Amino acid sequence: MTIIVTGGAGFIGSNFIFYMLEKYPDYHIVCLDKLTYAGNLSTLVPIMDNSNFRFVKADICDRAAVYKLFEEEKPDIIVNFAAESHVDRSIETPDIFLKTNIMGTAVLMDACRKYGIKRYHQVSTDEVYGDLPLDRPDMFFTEETPIQTSSPYSSSKAGADLLVLAYHRTYGLPVSISRCSNNYGPYHFPEKLIPLIIANALNDKPLPVYGTGENVRDWLYVKDHCIAIDLIIHNGKIGEIYNVGGHNEMRNIDIVKLICKELGKSERLITFVTDRKGHDLRYAIDPSKIYNELGWFPKTKFKDGIKKTIEWYLNNREWWETIISGEYKNYYEKMYGNR
Ligand code: NAD
Ligand code: TYD
Image (tube, rainbow, N blue to C red):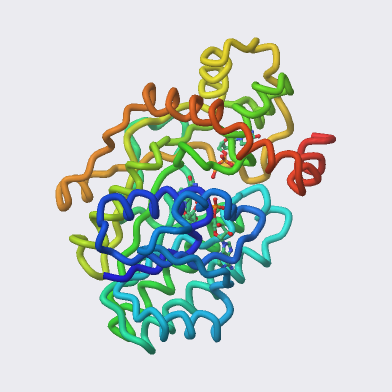
């Protein structure tokens, strides 16, 4: 079995590759990644010499490069993680989101049509459903919830999802889609809430909380997401969408306070800053479908997952310190300097 994993030098993609190489020692895993600011080759160093693994630096929008790789590898499955993934960046520069997230997806699926494939899996997000009100804890996103996006990021992911479903209906491409809630865990790029707060707290820097910090996210440990995708690509129904999330809703402010407590840092570091434009209030997944059909449920409880995550950032300072001391410094200054 040969699987091309796009975006495998990023947060979830790299965790997925590690998981798959360990679980399926006979599989050949090929990582295709452009190595944008979010892609980090150092993450993949421990597996670079593994004979079942190959890394290829390429852009999913580069049709010639993608076709060449399909010709060389004759993959059975594609799992597409490659994307521009940060909402705040999408508010600043939407165009690259449309290009990579929509056009790139189309190129990958064209290659699947041309060379034949057992399955194309699109890694999507619960953000395509928009948000839920804060005062309706009884409401959850199901696979039938209408698409109603808020940010250029979520709109580009929704556009890609529609294209994936269209390629299934029009060309009979064997596709599946997973829509997952917020992930956390090792190798999470420090522009996202949890790793940003851990890194700032460790450096005794202000902890920026958007608005009042009451927005709610449904957090899932990254390995549980990897397990879900593994189940879907092997046993999930073709043409179907699966929501992935763990009934683990938390307010941003509570996450930040929890990290302060775990690290023994003062809550006085917390700084309320200007809210994100169009900020989604609450995400919450109903995972009944994937539980009933594939037996998936989240194995890692938040209290354990967040401890493991903090420990990972403590033990891997070089990984994130290299990032925050490089080009990312300019981004941080631009986004938070005068906020
Ligand atoms: P990430 O930003 O950490 O990694 C993205 C990876 O894609 C990077 O390695 C980057 O170099 C690569 N990439 C970007 N543009 C590319 C291009 N044009 N060609 C090839 N490679 C390219 O993202 P992540 O958090 O790991 O998210 C992975 C996927 O999961 C995304 O599709 C995202 O929408 C989805 N998702 C993420 C979350 C989350 O909480 N992080 C939740 C649900 C869904
Ligand atoms: P983020 O990690 O960017 O994920 P997403 O926007 O995809 O959910 O943000 C998670 C939540 O944390 C979101 O409500 C925005 C908020 N947030 C802050 O309050 N401060 C920050 O510095 C960041 C990056 C996010």
